[in-house]
Length: 139
Image (tube, rainbow, N blue to C red; front, side, top):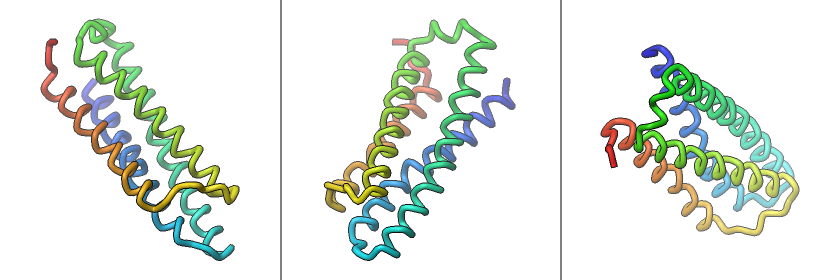
C-alpha cells in the first residue's frame, strides 16, 4: 500500500505542476499576435496538457486502487471531502482544456489578468487536499 501511496503522490505532483503552469502559458499566450507565436504556444499548451492529463489519470487510478484495497476508507469523512475536491479539480482540468481549445481556434475572450487569477485555483485545492490527507479530521 505504501508503494501505491508513493506513486499516487508522485503523479499528483505531476498533475498539479501542469495545472499551475498551463494558466501561466495562457497569460503569455494572450500577448501573442503573430501566427508563428500562436502556433508555438498552442503546441506547448497541448504537450503540457497531455503530460498533465497522464498525471491526473494515474493519480486517479492509484487513488481508486488504494480505496478498492481498503473500502473502509470510504467511511472516513476526510476522504469523502478529499474525493469531492478531486472531482472539483477534475472539473478545473477540463475547463483548462476548453480554454486551450479556444486559444487553438483563435477564440480567446479573456485577458492576461483573468488567467493570472485562475492560476491561483489549484493552490487552493492543493492546500485543502494535503491538509485533509495529513490531518485526517474526523468531522
